[in-house]
Amino acid sequence: MEKHSKICVAGRQTLTGAALLRELERQGYDTIIGRLGEEPKFADAVQADVFFAQTAPEYVFLVAGRSGGILANQRYPAELMLDNLLVECHVIDSAYRHGVKKLLYLGSSCSYPRESSQPMKEEYLLTGHLEPTNEAYAVAKIAGIKLCQAYHQQYGVNFISAIPANTYGPGDNFDLEGAHVIPALIRKMHEAKVLGAESLEIWGTGTPRREFIFADDLASACIFVMCEYDEPQPINLGTGCNLSIRELAVLIKEVVGYQGELRFDTSKPDGMPVKILDSSKLRRIGWEPKTAFRSALSVTYNWFLQMEQKERI
Image (cartoon, rainbow, N blue to C red):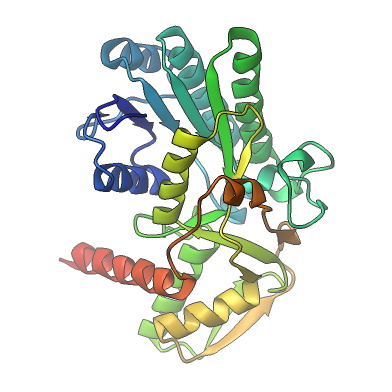
């Protein structure tokens, strides 16, 4: 991928997509298709095909598709599954038919089996039952990985896939209905702080462990993999930074400055017990994260405060 290559970020309005645009620009890539303006609905076959026919990208980062935390996965499994299936089918097929040189598809760590050995190696995919609370979404993300492999096998195209750790950062979704754990906890603790609440309820036991990656680090990893990795097998994109939900909540409490008590509602679901990636393959080819976890949480919270300020104005 050269600095003047025509690059498409499919899903540029997502957390990862926005971070990719920032990082591509920072690294000097100067021909990013659709950098401004409205993005086509890639879940629509016609819009996806017209976009690829008119823009003819050489490289595609496929990060589009709806996502959400446990609550969204419980309420909208059909919508999450269908949207992701349609997006990946139309983008991958359009990319093939319009001569894209290389495509990187981002899967999800929830696609690993619920009881997977830890840390999770890429070969553990499809070796056990999925976590029920996000099964529909996970099946759709697995289908995207397998579709890239199928196009590689049948057509010889360089379509690869990667599986990131739980992503967070500026631009995240802080709506409690659809938010993942970090933005949900940030919003809840900020609101509790503003209201002076003596306690705050958090879903689950607090014991599950999760691995996290700052969106800007993930963008760096995606560009690195696009340039350095060509195997059809997926590659994990993780940092090695993992902690329990309880430990995460305590850290976010400190960052936000909330003084109340944290109470864990054990009647609510936990999701997967442990979800930590084995990213040794990524390390071997030379990528390392750059952002410390606590400082990245502070950046994320400050971005949230800025958005809150704009909404009040």
